[in-house]
Length: 494
Image 1: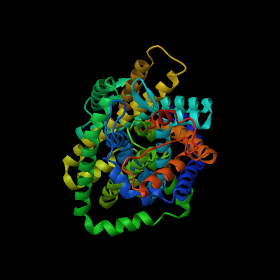
Image 2: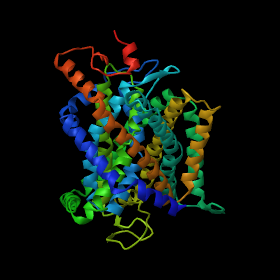
Image 3: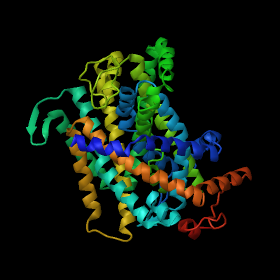
Image 4: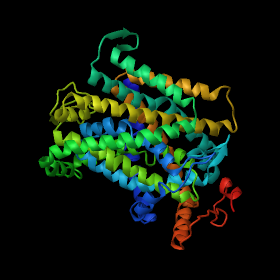
């Protein structure tokens, strides 16, 4: 199974996808005149400007739902994997893909808003919707929808629950082990997986509103607590900070970085974490109640900053400043370039982060990371369910399967339990397949959309013109802007 997964990943995650993600981010940054920097203050203002409605959630709730998908295992175990396989300079490339990816996040989120629709009393949208309406290619929209249901309903959940299981095992001990036909499982992983499945099942049967209300409380609180803990570790080791920064920038343009090292792992794990260009963010963006599509595009661009520049950086500095890492360029095994920890330390797991905190705060560090990871990964699982449900709703418009949502919930809960008890390498491999499939389809699609009609760019220009005119109530008239098939906005004009 591991060999099959690795073979598939070698095709999906070829250097072509890495450069495509970076290139698309650079292109959108230049053409939007670096909207992610120019309109930073506007992003902050917009966070609290919209209100929840019967059909939609507020911008802040949409940000929380989106962050619940972004802030997860990638911020803790993903950063560790980037450093462990790509070296410290992979952190720099995580920053690069975040900055450039913020413009991509604007484009895809604005498209999600422009082409959203009302489904059974709530807003729905995402790449499948805008590929059908804007590209006019229903087969491509179906391809994305099926790939996303497979990715977020079956493949990606294994990574989140696996990190919870590994963190619980390291923090509280493995306990009794059980031999089964699927392998050897520890009691700690079985208990952790069972708890996640039960609590997750209760919430996902409550719908998107319950998901939004839960995440808007949990995500900001846990993110702030985690960053505060990282700042304490950095402050205690402040004398080492200049050396760590030098270490990050030491290898960013070397041959190793350019061909499969820092760049590859920095981009790969950066995209896994911040999701810019991956196509998952537009689903939450489309669910928001806003006056103008560009507003939610800007809010989603800000979420990329929160994820990578704040949370991922906090993890990276904790790991590097305490020296709690190994570097093993060959992810399938091989010699260590740097070995500060025992050989058996699992690189693509929360272990680096837990050991970094433990070196400063004793046993509390492992437990804190396990608890923080539980909430981060748990809210990410909620976001995955919502995204999968949205794509099921898209397919349901033309093709209905009896009890399709019940099947989806059982499928996702089964994947969660499976991931919690399996080894990290297999779980990450499955997750990478899911991320890669969505990223290829979404990036190609939004690039085609850009050259065909530039709807997101037209929306941005329209919003900036209204803002410059000093309006207090923004309006979006797609027909005036030459944007076709934006049916929701056409039918809701003043």
